[in-house]
Amino acid sequence: TAGLMKGKRGIILGVANNRSIAWGIAKACADAGAELAMTYQGDALRKRVEPLASELGAYVVGHCDVTDPDTMDAVFAEVEKRWGKIDFMVHAIAFSDKDELTGRYVDTSRENFNRSMEISVYSLTALAQRAEKIMNDGGSIVTLTYYGAEKVMPHYNVMGVAKAALEASVRYLAVDLGDRGIRVNAVSAGPIKTLAASGIGDFRYILKWNEYNSPLKRTVTIDEVGESALYLLSDLSRAVTGEVHHVDSGYHTIGMKSVDAPDI
Ligand code: NAD
Image (cartoon, rainbow, N blue to C red):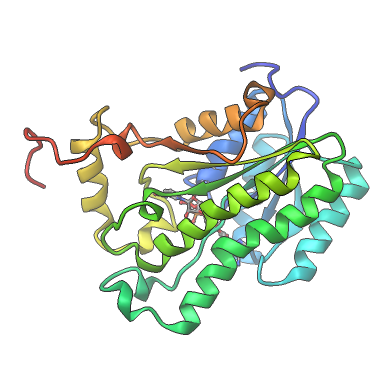
């Protein structure tokens, strides 16, 4: 991939630590020659993100909390001041109260439903509004989704509903921004043990289930998700928009558990 992203500059939102999917994407983009700007959410994560950013020669723009529009404005103003324009943006942000990532979806509270939707869904649109203004020569936006948007997965609950809305947002944004040469796509990643995923009930069971039953008989890594996202962020995918691209060892294709899968 050397040189694939040469001359391209982009913002990556959602790195929490070195297990984050956004970190896998950042590494793939930097290896391909992109210049990166990264944000962090709150001071606790700043300490994690700063050393990671310096490993890639990336620039840390500052704190960004998608529930606070002023912080989003500040990030884009700062990036515009520094670079004048951007070519790509990665949105790898989601949140739900972990007490509701277990048990029944029907018990979801109004408060957590609204909060999960604001952080995990509306934030893509809020950030796309700001990115559009500085994607002067077109661009590529990638977000992260999960199969729980399409089919019911145990414990995923309100996040499944949020991801379904996120995938629909990808399609609407792709149409709205298409005439400006801005593409919007999602990567639907298989389960990976990250900070966010550790809030999901029985997550270890879900990982094993995917390993035993996916066509490739294994789970996926942040580097693999990163390299697939790189394709969507680069000109290799210049005719692709509004797409949900599965990077899940093929899990979404199966209709039934493998007959030879071991017990978990
Ligand atoms: P992660 O915990 O490393 O990243 C989640 C990020 O969301 C963190 O950086 C956190 O700071 C950020 N975030 C949460 N609330 C925020 C807010 N209010 N403002 C700004 N940032 C906020 O976990 P991850 O698994 O790498 O998650 C990244 C994305 O990938 C999420 O959208 C997640 O749903 C998606 N995803 C994860 C998996 C998986 O199995 N890990 C699978 C498919 C999709």
